[in-house]
Amino acid sequence: MAGISSESLAAAQGQLEARLPTAALGLAEELFGILGLLDGQTGLLRALTDPARDGHEKAALVSKLVGGKVSADAEQIVASLVESRWRAPRDLGDALETLAATVVSAVAENKGPGTAGLEELEGDLFRFNQTVASNHDVQRALSNPRATADARAELAQKLVPGASDAAMVLIRQAVTAPRGLRPTALVTRFLELVAGRQQRWIAEVVTSRPLTEEQFARLQASLNSLYGRELKINAAVDPSIVGGIRVTVGDEVVDSTVVTRMSELRRKLAV
Image (cartoon, rainbow, N blue to C red; front, top):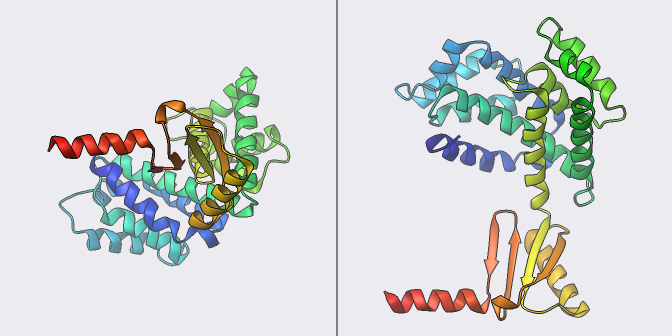
C-alpha cells in the first residue's frame, strides 16, 4: 500500500486510537465480518472506492449495508474509511483488515501489565506458524478448497491449545479468509502489527557513556511520565554521538546528541 492509500490508512489508524482503550474483540470480529462481505462483492468494493463518488454518499451506502447489523463503532469506522481516498479497491480491504487486527492487538495490550498481553499474543501466533510449518498434512488441510471454513477453524484451534481469545480471532481469520495469502503468511503480517504495538512500550536509549543507576532511574521516571505508561528501556552506548541522548519510542525520536546539534548548526550556517 502506497501513496494516497497509505495516507488514508494512517489517518484511519489515528482515529481508531481513541477507541482502543475500551475496545473489545467483538469489534474486531465485526470489522472482519464486514471485510468478508466487501471481498465477496467486487462491484460494491469498486463503488466504495470510486473517487468520482461523494464521500458522504459512500458512507450512506455503508450505513444501508450494515446499519443495525453491527455496532455503531464498527459502522462508523467503515463509513470513515470509505469517505477516504484509495488507490485501488484492494487497498480498502487491506486497510480494514489492518484496523481489525489492530483492535485485537490493543485488546491484548490492555490486558497488561506492560507488554505482557502483547507478548502472550505474539507467542500464540508464532506457535501456530511453527506448528503449521512443521507439518505438511496440516498445510494441505488448511489450504484444501473443499474444507469448510468451520472445519479449518476447528483444526486451527487444535493446533494451538490454550491460545488466548485474541490470538484465536486472528488465527481464525487467517485460516478462513486469508485473502489470497497462505494462512501462515497472513499470521506473519499480524505478528508485524503486534510487534508495532510492542514498540510503543519500548524506549531505545542511546548515550555516549553508560548511565549510572541514578541517571537510569531519573530517565525511567521521566519517560514513564511523558508517555503515560511503564516503558521498558533498552539502553545502548555509542561514543560517536559525543554527548547528549537519543530516545526512540515507536515512531517518535527525540535526539539531543552533540552530533545532531552540530549537524543542525552546519545546515543553518549553509543557508
